Image (cartoon, chains in turn blue, orange, green):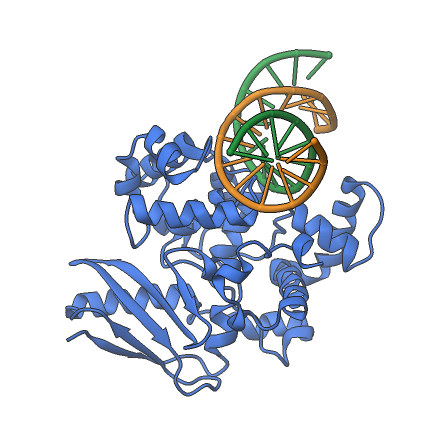
Length: 310
DNA sequence: GGTAGACCTGGACGC
DNA sequence: GCGTCCAGGTCTACC
């Protein structure tokens, strides 16, 4: 008989909206079921991998989460699972009201939280798999990393033991192979302190500089990882951002000119600018495809970017 | 400091 | 079914 957990949520939290708020909810090992409205995924816990299914049976803001596990969890594992779910769904985000004060456009819908991974390392690797590829390749890389290395997503120790050639041949990560192994070794050896990355006392500038020094992490990836760490003061500008500037905001001119206009456009949102940007993009996707919680992963696998949603 | 070209994969397209 | 082109961010070499 598997364990069952109940997790209390903040009064403004809504599972359907907040779980389906960033593309990573569609990446392995996460499995979103649009019919059952559940998120299922394996987690790495003390006694091994356990698969959990999360739902909010009372579909209203602030209702508790019901979590069903495929095996019995120890007391320590129950606490671990709660911590990881809290991270994924940002149940401990205390900046929601401040964000809505700065950008009231999202107060009514309540948007503020962006889905992320149970660990910062998974967020870093997922970001690397999203660089210089189209969305279907990102989907494939994450699926294969889970199939080949660890079903609950590779830990630093597991990934550090892999040969780059194995990752390239079996996980289709291409030239990212060596960079991923190097990132895993850096994290395993403590050169990159994952707890330090999550320490609110450390400045954004210090975190940003540390991320840029990592292999495979450039300006876009660093800003994206900072968002995943809960630091929203930088824009992660990629081709999708430029497209958003052109098609939604109506900007014209060279890419450099559009970048400048985007920075000016989001500057008033200060420490929250990534969220203000992202919910504009997400709103655009949902107007084209319907609410994200209705998206079937296979259906959006080839139609996730604005280029394909036109 | 700015820029060109290489790095890979997978989808689209033409034949 | 095959070949070609293209999209996508980071890194290195070069000016």
